Image (cartoon, rainbow over all chains, first blue to last red; front, side, top):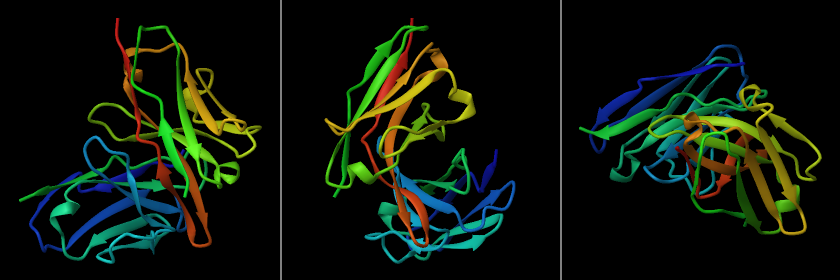
Length: 107
Length: 121
């Protein structure tokens, strides 16, 4: 099975900050990566698919990049509603595992 | 637009089974692969498996083989996930989610609201 790691696991940031989260895969997964945002008590929300394609309705301050084994999610200017947990997921082959998550908190 | 509405919270004893439903509305249901994901309290997301649009193909994560069964009733547009031989470690919120297939890649674009299953003696 393909394993995903995320770094950092926790980050504290201020409104307006640029934030970058990294997701690494244990083997190459081309661009079969999705990113989700999850708030407490809610279902995850798809932000990015295909490593870099912005899901419809998601603000343009979110962007994704990468291929192979290393991927990044960037929030260009953190907004109050962006404080949440972010998960990466690979969809290269079954099982479609998720990373452990990155919690973005208010500094 | 597809919507997924799940059944309510359940409390079960160890060794019992639970069957969670996920009712779909919208005309793309019959074309959609549906996946199940769970999240234990304070933990990350765990992929459990999927069922294809016609309901004749399933694929389960190895961890759940032998204990999970995913089915779909096309007449009522309802998906089911049954988990047997429950243990306390199965306490989690269970989500159904639709796989979006786009030219640039895939992702789970529509999710149910989640169903909390508590396993306790």
